[in-house]
Image (cartoon, rainbow, N blue to C red; front, side):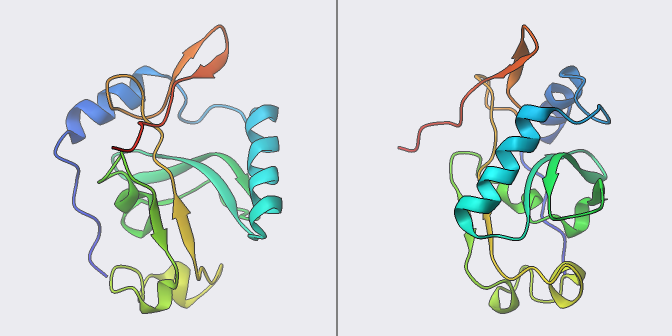
Length: 143
């Protein structure tokens, strides 16, 4: 399985991500509730808020997955950030050439479907800015 290529704005994206000081921070109840609700509404066993760092995918909030991070090379979200203005929908990961031999598909947690919505700030970077202790930002409107 070849890893996702890096976005054209990777250096700026990583600088923006690190400027938010979110990586390796404690969980937040509001985000934990959000992923639990997302899992319930979609009937999915897993829901995450993940941040794609240089070498890893780190989970700020998670439901149904016991690990705090994975290698970036395995991250579905590393593909999602390539088109930050679009939702990435993978209906059957076992039939998608990008993911069919991914260890997260061929073994536990046995991912079969994926929906990823990139988080972007006003400058097109992820994640949203934090103001007064609350996330503030938006997903770009689709054309």
